[in-house]
Amino acid sequence: MRPFDFTGTAVVTGAASGIGAALAPLLAARGTDLVLLDRDAERLDGVAASVRSASPGRSVDTVLADLADAGQLREAADRIVVDHPGTTLLVNNAGVALGGRFDQVTLEEFEWVMDVNFRAAVRLTHAVLPVLKAHPGAHLVNVSSLFGLMAPAGQAAYSSSKFAIRGFTEALRHELAEDGIGVTSVHPGGIATRIAETARVASGVDAAGAEQGKREFARLLRYPADRAAQRIVAAVERRRPRLLIGASAVVPDVLVRLAPGSYGTVLAAATRLAGLRRGA
Image 1: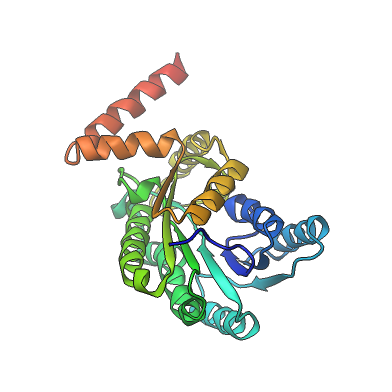
Image 2: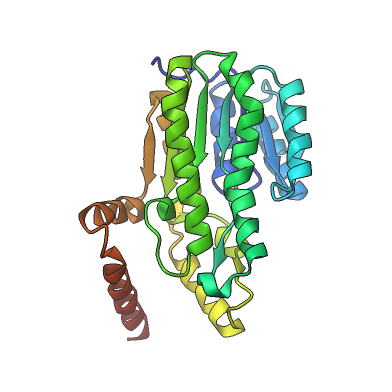
């Protein structure tokens, strides 16, 4: 498959901050028109304005939608298909986090994570896929996670959603090869985004545990979002089937391969050791 041609239109979800916001100017600089989707109107408008200023020759459209709402997503998808028939790149990047063991999570909370992290990507891809197939050489990117490679305690909902998107992506990679469409599964490690700030904590977790969990989660987020975006753009250009970003994704991936049945014990020991060091 030839290297990806960036001169079409890219749809990027979760574009108001983090990796999505970092992808927008990089794609525009390569000649890509943009459709930026998010639920945060103020931040989304800020990203769009910045891109328009830096790349005045590019078209930048914004779509406001809460991906947890199937009706809003359907309306957004219909608009994108009608208004942007030149779409050649879809980046399903939007994601939310929920901390807590499965017995602390309500089914409504679990479904919220699945709706945003998995079902929204499925629904948007299903809607946009005919447009991509009309342009041989198009590309699809689905952002999974480190927790789509491993599933630690306290991440039942999040890991379920990210393993699901990983499986969905791998199946599409095989199905769409004959149509000349590239597919990349992205597994970021601890990327410095707002996900810890916006994460929800299961209703069964007490307040003290919730604050501690958020602090521990935030400490993991060190890899710059702009560097992550650069690596994704390079992976798209080279048609890489899978991209792991950061040592915090690469090392655990090796651990899971070497000890698929017992990596949880290693993770627990490492977590305890890290806690002792912080308390020293």
